[in-house]
Length: 297
Ligand SMILES: O=P(O)(O)O[C@@H]1C[C@H](O)[C@@H](CO)O1
Ligand SMILES: O=c1cc[nH]c(=O)[nH]1
Image 1 (tube, rainbow, N blue to C red):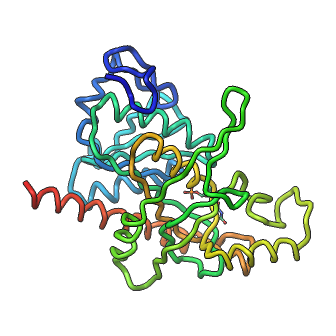
Image 2 (cartoon, protein in one colour):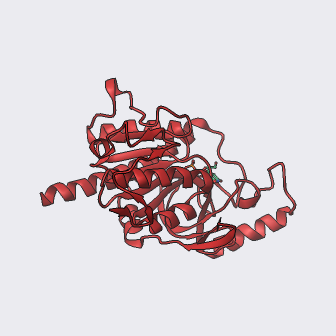
């Protein structure tokens, strides 16, 4: 049997998931990963280390020896890969090129492991558009830097456009799970761009060819279109998962209101606290899905 999204990838042959440092000869991928139902992704390794400890405790499952998460990608320092029962956790780095590498290898890993009905969640951070720092955005629509709902890339020397698909039922389910009234969780459009500075209309990068008025006009126009946040991976996430046949959602806490400032909060404690908010929503979602499955059994 071959992978639906790439007939060249077959079961039974040798493969090397290079950036995860896992090969199909030395690792029994099916035995280790067959029970995976959720893949949680975020940019930084340390955030995913924290998340696997958090979700492991919430689900009361083993994540390694002596509470120390086992990193299945230990042979490389490109990415980390942890597992807490049915939840696989990996970091994706910054931007779509970095996400595309790890997500290709995770899709193959799930195929070799014969996993079924897996849902991808990006638990991230972003810049808010007209909303307070600490607010969590659940993405309902995604636009690229040209404000189109497509992921543009170059393949075999040609510009290719891939559609994106955001599951609105999944987004609504997530927003209704908002577990804590100390902060707001909102549905909205996410703009996903290729850079943190110019791509997001900042004037505090080292490179900038536009005026502060241009910046304000751009951000105001985003607000008028219903955009709630800006980040750097979701257009890739929603396109890659759609092509591979997986459901996906993005739960992202905002670190700055871009109508007020370019700078994400420099309050480390507040940021750490806010980063827990997507953890909590993801955990409520995962537990409610697992409860439903157990209820059916
Ligand atoms: O989920 P994280 O916080 O890693 O993602 C956002 C988008 C970019 O990768 C990064 C820029 O600071 O933060
Ligand atoms: O403003 C922000 C904050 C976090 N991540 C982004 O991509 N943008």
